[in-house]
Length: 203
Image (cartoon, rainbow, N blue to C red; front, side, top):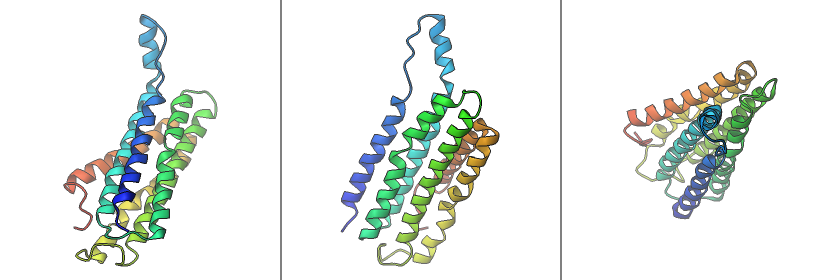
């Protein structure tokens, strides 16, 4: 099986997930000066939206780059890709949770930020499983690609496995700083993509 249907289905799921993010931002019903205050009060929604939009966008870019290396698809790859989509499709939930509770008193904000970190960890695990299956031998990749060179990129995909679980702990110390770390990881991946001149994992 080629990657055409896999890519089309994956693009559709990610497009829906990234679109659902903005639906979670409520339109204030206040008028006049109260409307301005209400808009400012919703800053957690804007922050969560921006981070999650960037995260899904980076996943889509990396996913495109990964599948560009694949010449043929087997059944384990299909199921591992479904695991990635399961994680990505659910991102609007922790995003809405953080947006709703980041300003809440007590432990609610910490729990919401921890759930966000846990979900990010699930995303990182799923992408790493997909990547490691693709490069575990040369059966699935294009013949002209160097398998050893591809495996050298595994460390790049492992960054989330290290940092996202840490954000769960950080969330119970400072929910805001936990989100800041998520944002910094997203910025790192964006800068990394530009530094590499796009997705060229075979180099």
